[in-house]
Image 1 (tube, rainbow, N blue to C red):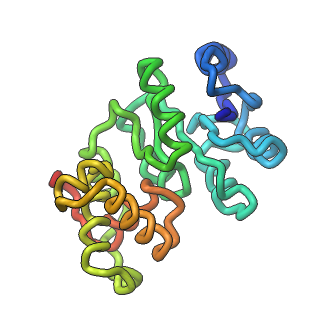
Image 2 (cartoon, rainbow, N blue to C red):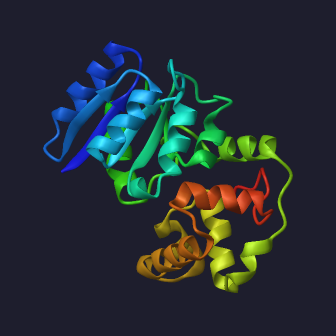
Length: 221
């Protein structure tokens, strides 16, 4: 059973998400929070698998709440998916850098929301299906100049290649086809790369790919 915490200051939004999620046989809503501070408290208390976190909330915004959750080693298994009204939200890339596993636009189709919740639990989610790889590049370009390769030196040539493909938005299956290897082999390379670089999920790996200069904004593979 996938346990989800809803964090949004609009009760109607929470009610809509709860009705959709609770109707699924493999998902349950563990709790609800109306501000970021309450969200952090409930995450520590309930230990949900996924938090659907609104970016803009009173008391403590979603960005700060996400950072507190991701900085807590005891909560490393909790995945945060940011909720935003607009695809081109200026805080989206910063949220991913802060530890969010991706984001969803609030008016996303119900089936896309369910697919994202299930996917993020398995570490496969990056962004809402309605958000293109172009957006990753756009926010990455705004963030800062590429950092020195540094930690990439511990990666093998194949791992660097795989990281670059993750950075342009390819799934394990697409990486496998590109490199002519099995999906399991591709997944293994991705996992080893994440472990070596200390990335908590694919979203963090994308951030590192851009910030290290391994992938440059505008590359679509």
